Image (cartoon, rainbow over all chains, first blue to last red; front, side):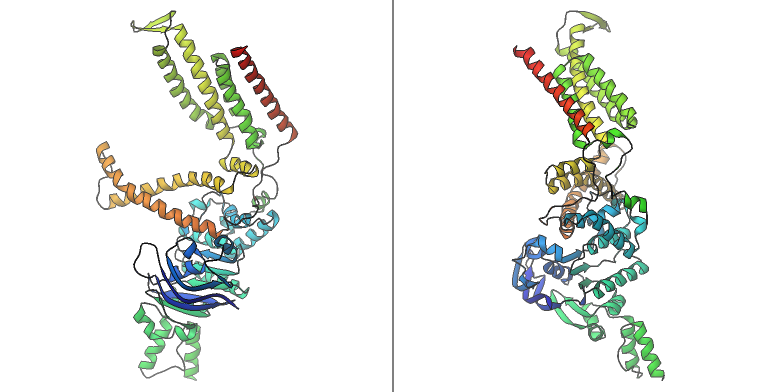
Length: 281
Length: 265
């Protein structure tokens, strides 16, 4: 089932001359994990804002083409109701705290309170999410006094607790250490396994290679290429568009150039190890 | 997992003493009635007795220090200022003392000043006592329960955090300016010169963070049209609390009637 479908979409923000999105056509299918990569200012966040309905409802601007989310034209969607279906976590964790809750537990519970969920159910769900993210020790802390990394986890917990069908996540690990980042990716994988559709903007390409089903590469508002992760991230030409590819993929290409080709280009370390073992016989 | 903390949400919130436990609207009602009564009575003996009562009460409910700090400032500023002004604005005939031999302190002006100061202090004492015994989130919870929209509640509560955030950002920008070699300390002229240029980035930053915050709140289903639930709940007012409120209100109404009778009767 298609959850979001974009056809020949062009968009420019108010008071700007250039299009932030240029002739975008793409179908997001239910239950898939999409990695959105590309240069800074390439249109990744704008695309997220469009799927989430913030464009055109919040940002206005000039939108052309067709955008259908959950079968309804985005212009006809009630953006408030869309928040129930699509969870959105964005880059800056400092502005994602409500500023009105005294503890992390209450902060995470806020979305469920807004949805009118019964108190006993709220408590259970918040407990589960805090445990899932490993932030039980933060539950009594004031969310406005946390570090960037801690706030990022709390912001993430505050959205996934709402159990949306689709998650649009824009650089959720920018403030996290490598272990914290890996944990977040594991959680996203768990959410994907629970049948949720996930769109993730991220620069940590090795993790994108390991976890995502499909990749969308953007440059100057265009989708340069898209497709299965293993196929897209093995392309050297992505480097020309300021997008990254995994180090092992570069190594795979260099092996081929050195006359020692592997049977295919690896995109994860595990794959590389397997391919080398296979080559060694 | 802090089980006792989690379980604290299952029941009504418990506070450290009986008055803090009162519903915020009951407290507001009682204290406002007392505050307004000092205005109606307009007598320094009543007003100052009320102030003493506030102080005793604040210590009795373990909020003495929090109460005395702002209240003593108000007493000093309002009380002293009113007394001085009244000496100049009220003409009296009974001179008590001649200050420095040239400034006559009259009995009429002194009593008038004491009366005015006492009702100002009687009223402001009630407000201070209310806020040291009530958390703003509890007041907004009670108002939401009475039908005030959650948007209003959010704006009121978030504005407190915004003040803290703006202060933090001001310091941050000041530090950045200092790192760039701009003089931000020293005499008052230097400080003013350093302060005005930061207003631009400060205001623009605040506007941009408001935009992001509204998106974040939207993502938390803040605008979804449905009846909200509350994780943190206050107990409904018990009968004795309602009785105290009703007795206070009846007394206040009687006082109003008496004052009207005094004026027109």
